[in-house]
Image 1 (tube, helix red, strand yellow):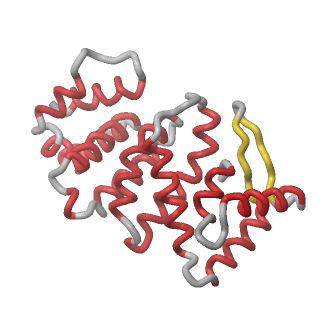
Image 2 (cartoon, one colour; image 1 turned 135 degrees about the vertical axis):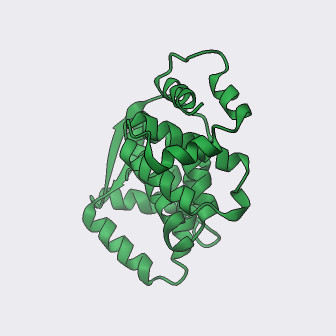
Image 3 (cartoon, rainbow, N blue to C red; image 1 turned 90 degrees about the horizontal axis):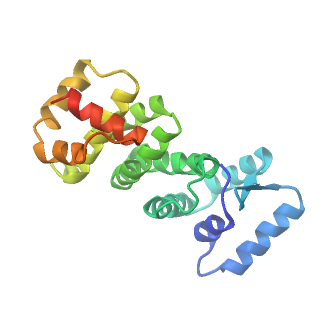
Length: 219
């Protein structure tokens, strides 16, 4: 998906190639119409054209150590998820969501880094829900639950993931069956979590209100 120049620098610069060289190389690609430039809400993003993307993907697959770039990409977007939103712009969220999705899928695939994948998903899920991507949230929550590393079991991370799963199912009017039983057993018994969700009464915020209604449903 579209990305800021800072992402290109973070992913590709190292001891051999510095940030200035990366910016120069990106500028050359823009001049040659191999990379498109878009401006949304005052922010400039770059986008690889399909032919450029296909060529870069093939080259990376043959490059020794090419996997390190995928890891840097995932770590960069994990760091972005930890930062509070500066613009509150829905269009900016849409631009970035494709890269967040790719990073999480990479971390999950072939067991590369399930701890990173789960941590990123716990931060990213509310943004996916805000964009109405309920089905994708449901699939990813289920995958995260299935592949949750043992060291995350019976921790706040697992509770957070269960909380997100409950909210996702309730958002999609799919709040019964085996998952309902699981949520009743695991979240319903966590009084502290339920009290935290309900503290202050029902919220006017749509996502938080859905989360609260989900908590009420499994009490």
